[in-house]
Length: 268
Image (cartoon, rainbow, N blue to C red; front, side, top):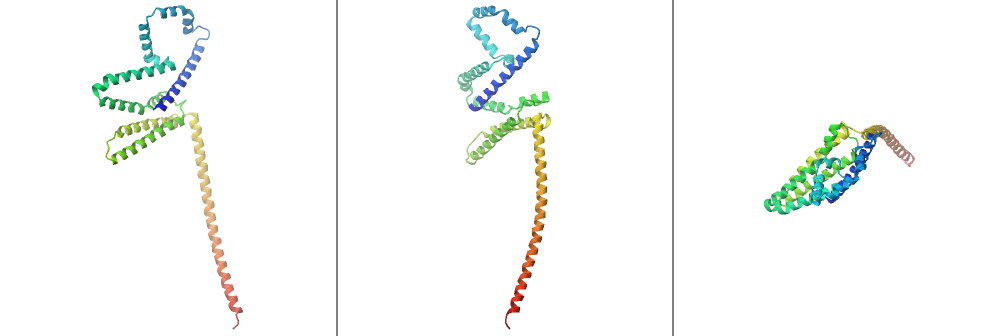
């Protein structure tokens, strides 16, 4: 889980950099021949913003900061990487405090089971937003086939692990909750395969089309070589069988001839 969180943070950092570059390009194109609103605001009132910051009480500025931090529109469009890290830390602290002092004392193990089910459901639906986006855009540009195959392989290995663990524990007569994890893995594999079909069959990218053509050419070449090899081996077997028959016949003839010559040369 820690490695997964680190990799997801790296992907988030790359996504934010890509979004910043695209927004900068759009702003440059849109501001050709005119002053952009952001620049005019930043250039016209630096002193006013400083005055507002100085005059704002600390408590109010903190509330405004958290309001911007948890705003859905800012999360989707304006958050920086540090904002996302801060959001993750604050959300984890809130859930930890609520769990220790409210949920667990009141509900006990039920809240633990609920958190487990929610986490499994969210993890199993990770590929669903990508599938919806591919369906809306009718395209899979920017999606790597090897990454999607990695999703399928990881979920398949997890499924095998939980099935094996369930069989072991059931054989020992111990109770286990592997069925929930197995259901989550099956749902995740379904959505992963859905994205694979979108990438390879329904909305293939040029790279996938080139890979498909290479695979088809390799299969045709292999089939042709196999047929030619089979014909050669078949002809070789016929030739070897004919040569073997001729050799056996010659051997028998020579044996008979030597016996006859020996009998003829023996004294009577």
